[in-house]
Structures are given as structure tokens and as C-alpha cells.
Length: 321
Image (tube, rainbow, N blue to C red; front, side):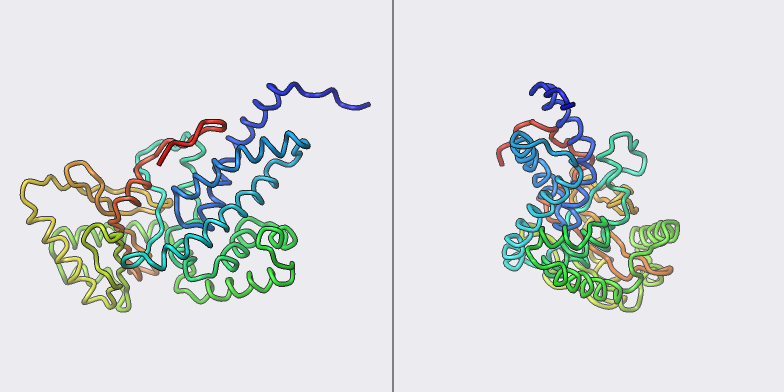
């Protein structure tokens, strides 16, 4: 016996509830592909009217599968166009992190995305070295478990070709130091040592927190002061950081506050000037030393990473930019 038809209003409500429940995972999919929180949230929101339209033609039975494919396709399209903009970017480009205070309650499922290590900041940085097709294939198959046949539909390649893309991406990522399996307690211990040494102007103690081959990357977006090229080596990085701390100390009439935050679930350092977040310091830790220091200063990215931003619910109109 055929099921009775569902009233349109009831179906719309059912879809909206299911969409909002799946939104954290879909945001994680889009962010892993894009490395941009703002763009990831926009991609997921833009898939809502497409879902309603598709469901109006024929009921979507597996919402998770449908949304994963739709979000991944849209994110991959955005990434391809974003790559052109990133090539013209002034100075190094760093991903936008998900940021929250360690004391924040994580009652909202959206906030729990920040604790998911599959999109750790270290991983988000290294994913930038992959092609859009390699990145999407690896993220969807290795992280989110999609079969290669479904990944192929997203990327626009054959399943065999997608398998090769994922294999190349896997080999590249496996060659990276630490492979992102960072012990949380060790990360926090190094961060506290790093902060104490930098804030206290103790160059020797700061050097002891840095790997000899550490790389510092600073992203000012061409708007604020930042190193235009990566800084290599423990001595150069330590002296660069000491100079930066000195500028903050010498800033007259500005209230500078240091706070510990969570960036993609890992501890990081936030610097505020007169209450405004102006810098994020993110470490990649291997063993008991930092192998990367990422200094995010681009105002637009810091605004996008603002603590616990509100995310639009299903059906809510998109704000004008």
C-alpha cells in the first residue's frame, strides 16, 4: 500500500530539521576542501535551496549522501576559482581556522566541529599544496569514507582516476613530518612554554621550543604588517618573534591582551588590541618542539574566525556582502 502524501509544510519542516542536524558534518566537508570557514559556511547554506528544489521534484531519501555530494561539488567549484585569487594574494595565504575559547561550552553541534582533528589547522595548511582534484578525492574518500564511484561523480573523473588522485594525495601527506598525529597534552605544553618565553623576552627559552628547521608563515592579507615570505630556521624565527613582541610592548596607548583559544580544536594564542582580535599564533608541534609557526593577521580572516559566529539556519536569507 502506497504511503500517504506528506503535506508540503510538514515536509519543508522535516527537511529543515534534517538539514540543520547535518550542517556540522557538511561544514566539515566543505572546510576540509576549501580551508576557508566563511566560504564553507556559505557553500553549505547555498545547498539548502538546491535541496528543497531537488526534493520537490522527487523526495530525497538519503539526505546525508545527497548533501555530501552537493556540498563537495560546490566546494570544489569554489576552490578552483579561489585558487586563481590565492595566486594573486599579497604574501603567503593561510587557511581560516575555527576559533573558540577553551572555556566555551560546546553545546551547539556546530561548535563541536572545532574539535574534529580531521580538519586540524596543520592539516588544513598542508592540504593547500594539493591540486583541487587531489584534495577533494582524498578528503571525501580517506576522511569521510565515500566510495570512489561517488567521489568520481563529484570530481568529474573515472573511479580509477579518482583512486590515483587519492593515492597521490595520500603519499604527499604521509611524507609530511608528524603526519598530524599530535598529542594534545604535548601541544599544550609546548604552547605554554612558547608563550612564556616570547612574552618574557627569553630568547634562549624560545629557541628551545622551536625545531631547528621551523618555518614561520605570516598572513596579513596585504592589509596589515606581515612578513611577505616565510621565515626559516629557529634562530631567525625566534628573533622575528622577539621583534614582534617588542612592537606590541612599545605600542603606546593600546591595550594588548593575550588569550588562549582553540583553533580547530588545538590550543593557540590570540592577541587583542583594544578588544579587537588582531593576531592568531598557531603552532604545529612534533615531539616537544614547534615545526611550524603560523601567524594569522589578515583582518578579514580574523573576522571570519571570530569566536562562535552565528550560522544561518535553513531557509534564512543570505546576508548581503
